[in-house]
Image (cartoon, rainbow, N blue to C red):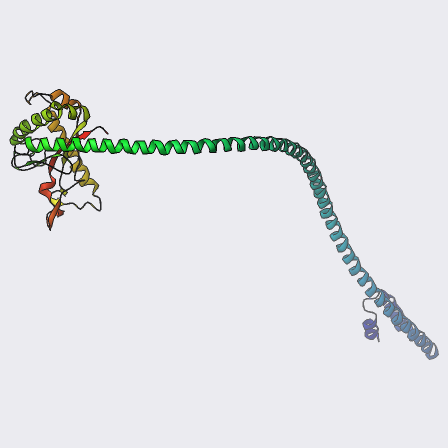
Length: 354
C-alpha cells in the first residue's frame, strides 16, 4: 500500500504528509477496533481519491506553468527582436534624415545653378541675336567676295596664259642653250679620251672609271692618270661656259657627281630591299671622291686656267652612292641587271637658270 501511494503522489508536496498518516495508522492499528479501522480506511480512501484529484489538478497547473514559461520566453525573444529592430529603424531614420538634409542642400544648389543657367541662356540668346546680325553682314561680305573671286579667276586665267607663253619661250630658249652647250662640248671634249663623252639627252659630261680615270680600290685617292685627264677636261669646260656670253649669263651651277656601283664587300647589292649598311658605305665613299675632285681642280696642284675662280664660285660636289646605276644589256652574276663597270663614273652636270 505504501509503495502504491508513493507511486501516485511522486513529485507532490502531499507525499510527506500522507506518509506520516500511514505510519501513525501502522503504529496504532493494533489498539483500534475493526470498526474504527474500517472507518479510518474509508476516510483514507476518500482522502486518497481527493489527493489523486488534487494531484491531477496540480499536474495540469504545472503544465500550464510550463506553457506560460515557454510563452514568456518567446515573448521576451520577440521583445528582444523588436528592440533590435527598433535600434536598426532608429539608425535608418537618422540616415534618412541625413540624406534628406543632403538632398535639400543639393536642391538648393540646383536651384542656384538653374538660376545661373537661366542667366546664361538669356546671355546666349543675346549673343545669338548678335551672331544672326553678324551672319547677315557676312553673307553680304561673302557675296562681295564671290564677285571679287570671279574677277580674280578671270585675271588668273589671263595671267596663266601669259605664264604659259613665257614658259614656252623660256623652255625654247633653255633647250636652245643646252643644245648649244652640248654641241660645243661634243666638239671640244669628246675627242680628249675614249673614257670621256657627252650625253646627248642630258648634256652632261661623263667620265667613265677605268684605265684613264679612277681611284685606288676602296679609297677616295685618285690614280695618277686621273689628274692628267682632269687637266684636259676642266679648263676646256670652263672656257666653253664663260667665254660665251649667252651661256655665262644663263649659268646657275655646275655639279660634280660621283656614282658608284651596286656592290659591297665584292658582292652585288640589290636596290630593293634597301641595304642601309651598303648604301651608307657607298654614299660616304662617293662623296669623299667627289670632294677629292673639286679639291684638285680648284686647288694649288691644278694649273691656273682661265675662269678658274668663276667656275669654283658656282660648283658643288655630291656623292650619289649607287642610286642611279647603269642598266646592263644582259644580266650578270656579279651585278644582276646592272653594269657595275659603267655605273662607276663622274658626271659633270651644268644647270641653267629657270
